[in-house]
Image (cartoon, one colour):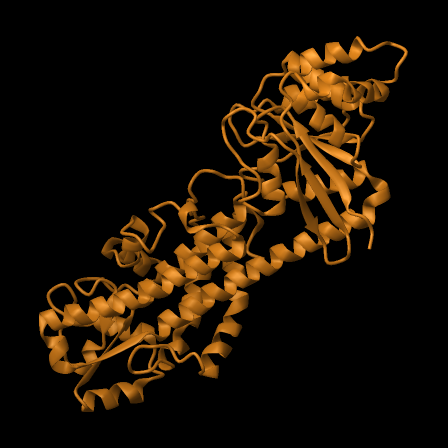
Length: 470
């Protein structure tokens, strides 16, 4: 096995070095991130390894704090010395363990690696301290790739930095926002590292190939869990004696039981998806959390949201007192109260399909009514879960703000969700009378497998709306 490619991550205090590594290694717990100056005080190593045998060992270094004074000191060591020799003489002297202790840790690491990523806060003006840093880092005679961080910020000064870098023998740079990496930014960074170290091309390519495969596998895993959750929701059913549904109190209790079962299933899907993408529950905005009383959970059964879903589905059924839960009222001869018309209930039955008609008729004969989730609820749950997946795909592990599941609401996305909900209907005939999904039923697993391509289409559209749904 080849030795790992050794890359030092260097730069000024609070430039985002640790944040960059958190995102590249997909480890939100790596190092310490803070707005306080000099958060990183020691060199910390982390590794990214590819299945092909290549590996990159990153070294997170302390921030450079007084480059101007150090630059003057180095120049005072003698013009007869080469720049690397000046650095070595400095490291052998008392100043390296004194006033320039932090800078010494950086330079000592830089002399011992293959190359360096020089992280720059693109929001900062090009000040003399940064020019001094560039000269000092170049003195170590190691390939250096400038990485312009925080490029998504409105105050980023990309043009200024790109103009000044060549003046300090730094030809070429990449833009990589560690908090919210743009599409293709990570690949551009790895390609730049290959250009920087052509002798390690195969190792770096092996790592990048593995990272790309992991992206595909994460997305597929997320799509599988979303599909399984939707299949479970479609199969969810509650049976009750006719008299329990006629009574208002009994009906509300049954609806509450079914609603809680649905929410419990969605909570699990959200939790599992956060695990797949390596994020924690406390990183999600409270309006997203389905385990709190936040707006997101309320939206799953919000009448206004469900009416919107009804229009998207083209069902035309008004959502009333049942708040997104329909009883088979037309077949059972029951009314769901003033807020739900018989016509709306018939629409619910039609949307669920007649594959289980024999069971319905048998239940009528026994005086049993079935409660199940309307397609509108499935549509809202699907939209929310895919929106969360898209937010996690775009999020860097260095982000400190809460996760917000912004979504791409357009006709193409609506059409794909409509197609997916329609394909869920066979699941309605595969549930146990108690409302628990029959996990061992091979028909459910087979249905979920057939829905995976449709889920990939929705995910691709939500993640990259401008790239189409392929």
